[in-house]
Length: 409
Image (cartoon, rainbow, N blue to C red; front, top):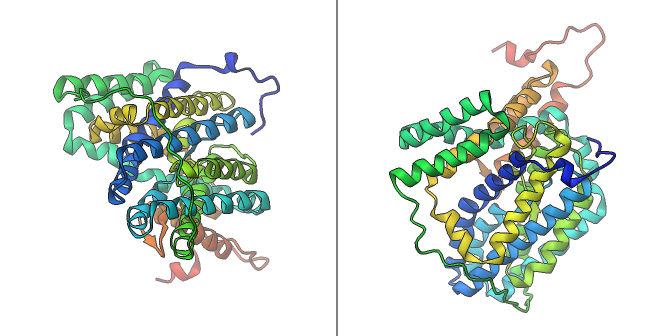
């Protein structure tokens, strides 16, 4: 997708894009942040160090997302690695905190080297469009299912929010997400309350920790953190952007996140990477009908990250206080458009439907093999199936949608 010939932030600014950024931030903090807090508690970190950790990942994600979105005029969002944080739940219990910081630093350096190599750009350019779209759809499937699954657990809230979204898409499509979020918060406040009384707005105080290096932490934490971030976060993140029609230079983007990771590692950040789920929210049509103006949603997300980071735990506690059903509903509804686009792109070409189906099912399965998450294996198996099923056929042979080995069963 080409950049606008005369970019102007004032001209491109829109309220729906700002709301999309707010929803993306809501999804980031209300869900994955729980894993961060769990990892910090497992390591018995003080509240001050936890606040510094939240400051670091928020500031790093916000600045990187703003810079990249402005530079390339695309909704390129940065985030912290949720699988990486999950890895730390056990990893921080095995190593001293200073050794973990040293591992963060090494993982960031490896990310910088990966960005400089140029290999990522070449690899992303070789992924078939249908496979990228199927991977996106598989990643987003559980969010869509979660939204409608809430009809059983929170029928009133789910009914109100889903009905609001459908009606707003018909009458006020540009404000559908804003109206849905407002209706959901209002319904929650009336029925169960928001319970925000314990929130205190105190400025965050970053705490520097001098990194220490040990062979055990480098092998047991730095390398796994780098691999998990690259495969479970960066690869799906670029797949989301490619499926939405955006093709940023992967090497330069990863380089930027690597620099942010290195700079903030001593303050507790385990790494900054390319976002996937939140990027799908900001790259979808609800952010703006014109794809060239959706980068504003990336700027909005970055702004909310910076705001949350500046007050440490305070605003994070606001997001954490929101009922899980409200967050699940808002995430699922916000991702309906990207999910639909992913499914449409995945199965648009008859010749690639089998490999796209494999990618979609594996990516949405939730499996973890060898420490690598489902989207990675969906990408690997999907590309393998694509290479096998779309190989050049013998001249005169009639191609079949279903392979012969399948037809004989």
